[in-house]
Image (cartoon, rainbow, N blue to C red; front, side, top):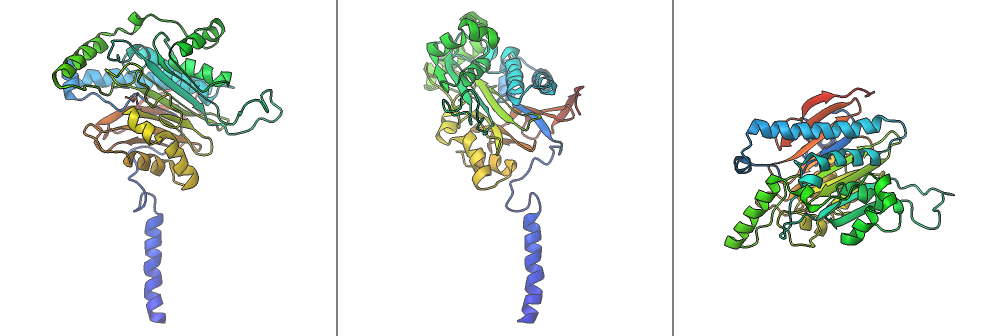
Length: 385
Ligand code: ASP
């Protein structure tokens, strides 16, 4: 007996040691290339990255593609990071700033670069959420509203240049969480809101980019031939940030799926599906086939895994994506940032990649596109610690 335990215990010890090593057995494969710095802002520009055929069609060389997207991601990160460096600015401010930049860039499927629905119109969705869970006792709103979880969203808007700011306005009004269509527009374009949140009314022509016009013509032609051509719009945008007060926020903005049915709403403005934040766990923004993300409540699933199963952000995010169906072009991906500044990019097994990047607390800005890309240092922004 004694001889057996002498052999058995060291062997068990070895197994326990192995299991507790980071990345060993139970853990998902970690992004071994990601440096260990603490991150304060993480963004994505959509899971539908351009493949070789897309590049050919757009007459875009590989180098030009990289330059254009890496540059846009890095500038969006810089915009968000600079906001975070200002005293009193919050994670919500940074998320909004980074997303507003991407909504203006014209290269993402959000704001000016958004895809068209089957009727040749844009219908934009956006959602934003604060991670704060604190009850502010004695505050103006105590007893009237639940101030612990603030979130706001707009869906199916066609005349707003910055849907993410409209979503923020809905959140801060604390009456509704999700406004759609004309009601969302009349709320966001009301004089006071428009001015406070820097939102402009734009005509449909504002969204007529060459690329999206060609894309919708092609999709409709394909549909006439084989039926049902609806697809990723290449470039939904999202951000998650952590501020000096330790508060998280997440936001997502999109034109949805190209050639979608008019009135279709995706996961981005659905709190818990495409967007979620909780200071006790992490902030999440998703991209991909919205219907799947809604059915699986993916953004909240990541948070729930951290809260209830005590998973790390890496494990929670990668398991939440791994449970989704594995479709031909991949279903999508997500970004997640936890309250300690650890982040993770999760991508479904067969997806090519995700436009993505992060800013560290030191102001270093990294971006990547395809799945196996090493995060590339683009710049170091002054003002970092
Ligand atoms: N998730 C978005 C939607 O379904 C699209 C995307 O991320 O590409 O509306």
